[in-house]
Length: 135
Image (cartoon, rainbow, N blue to C red; front, side, top):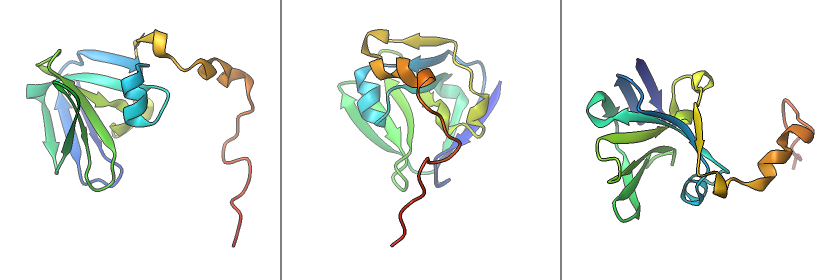
């Protein structure tokens, strides 16, 4: 499998050739805090098969757990932990075409945001339901 991706500003890019080790949505409280979102979608990749280009800033969110992000635009790029020393978990939203992402599991459901159950029942819009105020 050949995959590629980049941060929001394009300063960091990645390419991957190989099988995906994980393909999941994580609902843990750490991912919620790290991404300011109710869950995070990851692709597990073998460290030796991913190539990065550009500067990445690393944050040790807990002992032996690192989160990489672009220092220019702040895009979260990956999660890496000593628990899985041969893998890096790349954020699926950084894929060149994130619409192609298809998770096959959800994990840490005990931390899942309860309001996600309501999404199907609340109004949906193709854009913002109100235009921005002009000054």
